[in-house]
Image 1 (cartoon, rainbow, N blue to C red):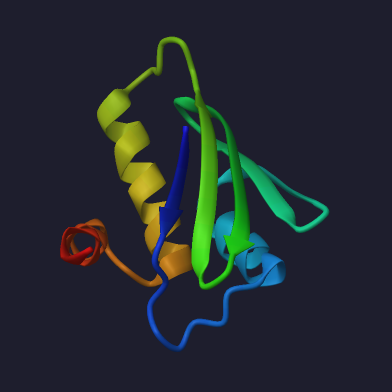
Image 2: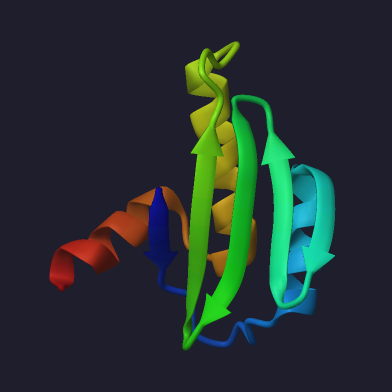
Length: 97
């Protein structure tokens, strides 16, 4: 599933920045070209890259995540670390479109 996330003003989004922030939250973080790949419990693969001024993310979920609520919490924390926007702020920005 692919998604794009707005980024807080003042954050210079780059593959190196995404890599740095992802290592704080995710596991098995590696860079492949200009894409950053990682995993978290419940999500097999997270592929992140810069798309213009937005963070582009594509995920592959586990068949049976151990704790779905924990997966959502960790995923939201990962995206917040990179974009600078909480899930509430992201939802508010998306509803304005």
